[in-house]
Length: 239
Image 1 (cartoon, rainbow, N blue to C red):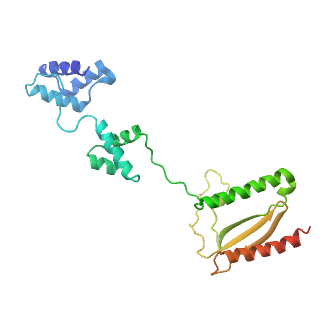
Image 2 (cartoon, one colour; image 1 turned 30 degrees about the vertical axis):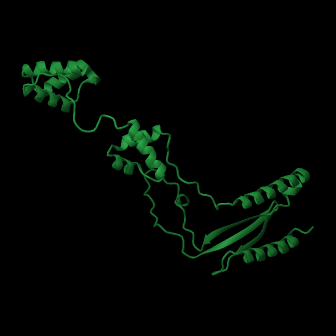
Image 3 (cartoon, one colour; image 1 turned 180 degrees about the horizontal axis):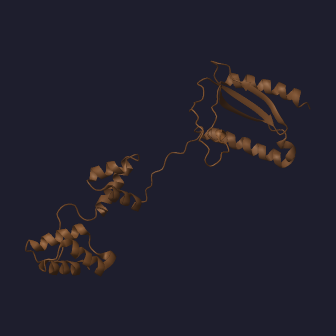
């Protein structure tokens, strides 16, 4: 199709038709496959300079596609050597475009993912202990049914700021369409905060403990808190 348009351009150039009009005629004749205005100007100059060839001359420089088997192998080696390497770094090393590198990475089956955050990394022994405890709890539930669930006490801890700013959603009010908008200064939570540990069961709240300023969570602290929880349970849930 491009050869035909080049031939038409050559004929119209000899007829001394202006480039803008040539492009309009090509658009009417070829529609969406018409060559661009910049390409047309290049071909007009080509024919005005006395050239008669209507074929695209081979261009020097990098090949039309950089996604070769050799480059794929190099990309694979770079990724194997450094799993954190970026597409831009690979493109600079190979001297090829960003999109070509991205295409090769996808064809190699790679995709970049973030590490999944977990509260803590458990050892094999820790996992074994948790599995054993869980199996024991399930076994008790099979024998005691819902009565066992009533014996479970849950604890949770969280930081509380001395001052918690009002959220944007909390400041929402009903207004008419032309009512003036309300303004609110942005505030941040106070720097002073305290940790609170709360325990509860199926019947409700049992105990709340605040961490004293300067104190840290330790085995001794937890042991003391569990002793206090046991005494509170004996008082609130006798029998």
